[in-house]
Image (cartoon, rainbow, N blue to C red; front, side, top):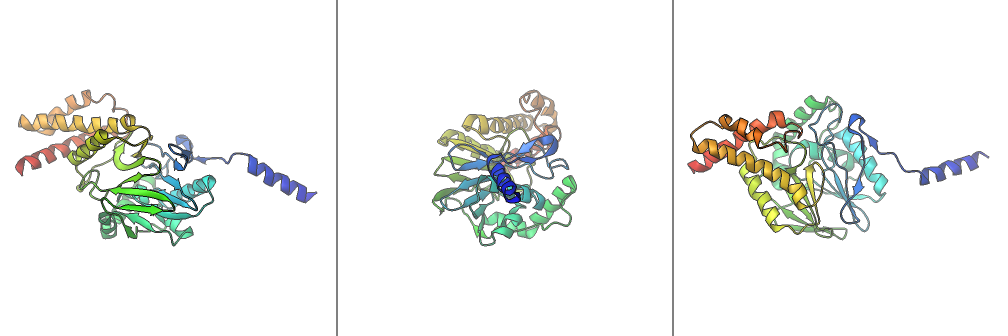
Length: 321
């Protein structure tokens, strides 16, 4: 009778839904089919990396082709990668054929290593600037940041670098799925790519768009460049689905609009201070007053002032050209 019990348990497992990844206070996380039938996204909590989320807060995505899967930004460390891979395999048992990384920040690509362990022949694509910068020290910098914030990276295998270049304007087809690549010269960073999935009319924006949280702008970024990029996207339209680097996916206005509005308020207030020959912090109070929509976004309290100072500096530098 033992074999009957075994068969019963297998049948039970086949019909019962698989439990999702339990991320404690941040709730369950799983891949959800959104947009076209072969696009799946697992939305991470829109917060900074911390011990509770273990460094998972980005939006990994999978596109299902005829024989395999293409993965975009698998996550921020080895342990996260194990969980993400397990959730991928609940969606499909097809092999991973390729991985695409949107930019240099480790919370998006450190989990490459897990997927590469199981699928070592799968190419990993990124912009050449990203490949160069992560090998030159950006990976180590982000490893230190994430380990400090999460406390869970020590002793894990940190990197599997991208090994195939994607340049602005390039089109690639993988397993019947076509992708167009756009590289803004300088927006969120100088390493970013935006990825258009032609088949589903989906645009993967990377961290050029965030919703419900604010991240940092480093020396390789440009807030003015980010504004120009998003204004162009808003004007062009044409996609069914927009997937940000952090926060919920959706249609154009609901996804791209809020972050663009935030950046434009920063620019306008900083410009006001600069033209009055005042320092940027003199308009901080007025800037906050215009940002009621964003004051509950994660990290607003310690990022907004930095952003205001940065765009002020960019305005000053542009005036000096």
